[in-house]
Length: 234
Image (cartoon, rainbow, N blue to C red; front, side, top):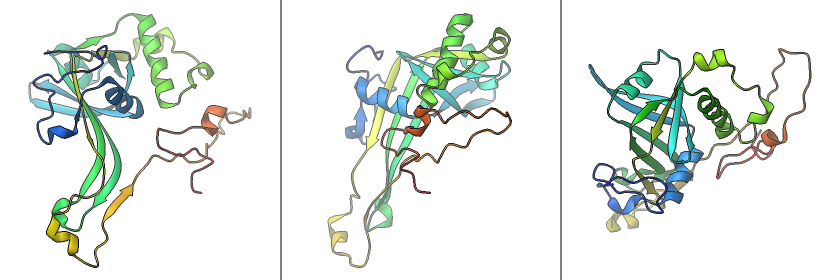
């Protein structure tokens, strides 16, 4: 069964279904979208004549598809559009989980796996829109402050669109899951160490003589669950 993000509940298809600890599987649009929209980097898996290839690359979700971009000679992107389908994986790490036993140490995370067919984007208007979406994905509100890509820059950039045909999320939350007999161990700290993306103060580029005030969207910049530069520790 194949499904898109237009459905309130997506999947699970046979290959996207979470099998190990299936209670951690999530298939609703809100969970999938929130993870994809918070992340910066996905791992793109493609098949090549020499075997599987997986590379980290930037991405942006626009509706029911994911855009990737790179140089025209980018090997993984070329293989992606030449193949039958691709796999994309995004993982966000939320906390370290320290248990009383070494065996039960873990990590709290949110992850998404997407399976779909990749298509090269040839239309300049769609390419330009996708590349500007990349800018706003990284820094919301940034694109109006930038010069849009020129036609020559668009020709020098390969843009690939992956339709989200099959998708699932997997989420771990909460503290350690120690064995009952280990709860009586003394002198061992157990719990969670939360992790978050914390921006530092913006550093202006000094290669041009004109001084421009720091934009408000940078002063207030934060990823979900993170802090703003003003709140970040010095």
